[in-house]
Image (cartoon, rainbow, N blue to C red):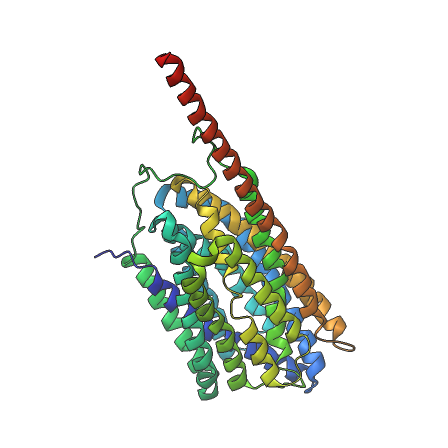
Amino acid sequence: MKIQLLEPVVVINKLGTSFFDMALTQTVYNQSLKATAGDSDRAQTLSSHFLLIQSVLSSVAAMLSIIPLSRMADRHGPKVFLVASQMGSVLGMFTLVIFMYCEVPLEFLYLGSLLHGLSGGGPMFWAGVAALASLSSEQGKRTLKLNIVDFCFGVAGVVGGLLSGYLYQMGPSILLLTAILVSVVALLYSVFALTDSRRSLSESEPLLAESENGKTMDRVSVGMLMSTMVLFMLGMVGAENVLQLYVLKPPLSWDSIWAGYGRAATSTMYLSSFIGVLGLFKVLGDTALTLLGIVSNCTGMAIMAFTVESWVYFLARGIMMFACVPMPTLRAMLSKNLHPQQYGRVFGLLQLVLAVTDLLSNVFFTSIYPLTLGWFSGFCFLLSCAISYISAIPIMYVNLSIKDNSKILHLRTKILQANRKLLQLNQEL
């Protein structure tokens, strides 16, 4: 029996990846500590370089797979994105199993990144999620729908972050085995239980940025919305990955338990962002919500640059309570400019652009971070703040354009009404 609920696969998949990410990060850092005889700064540098190469391999491989997967999605539906990416994720996890139980070098884990990337990786998973969520929701409720999906993702991240530290204390192999089992359950759900949730493509749902004849969409607005997402991710992704290493070194020196708390606090932002959308959507609208999220993220990241005690970290996370609002809201705004038949192709293209952005962000911040360890290791977070603030410019342009277009349409309507009245008067005379 096929069902249309997308949220369960997002939750289960996030639990599995949370467990695996903790196992991978701790394994890489511990191996780096052994290689450097306990020197934490050198271990940070080695771990940073390893994770950078791993990210590059995964992102490049994902870029190679996006075009063929998008063509398959056009023929068979966007569920292809979910199934392919999760299959690669499970196969990639088994490379860490082999590393733990066989005498292989750490570089063997690069194979797992390649497998995950060639199957689409995270970019294609989220392309499928965005397309299916858009197909299963009405235009007026789409922002709320995509934020509900993000909320479920965040709740799963909180649970996964809290449990992963304790499972790692029980044994790295137990944590890794749990990650694989949970990820397999998510894959099976996607294959056998989830349907494409397609609404009728012939339904008359107007586009947000259609012209008067209804045949063209505002490509400038689509480009600006994509630019906002690219700039926001460019500043956010690389800094978040660096932050995972930052908390492991002095002065914080977190162990796996505290690292789990940190991941849970990060994922709690999805919960607070959802509550914010739920309470403020009708009052503020899409554009204002996006700007609120950008300001929230940048302010918290600026405070993170000066974190020397754990409570400051959690204070910064509290200020970043709306940091997860922009991406799902921008995806909803983008989908309102598209016909349902374009979802697979455009969201696939979007994820290709975001995959390149993810790669550039990781390369940029992971390269800068080791250079700043000797004078100000929080510099990356200030840089992240500055870049993310720039992302507010395109969305403000779109908002002004929409207002101008609305005024023009309103003026045209009044002119047409006046002409009709004049015609009626002429006919009466």
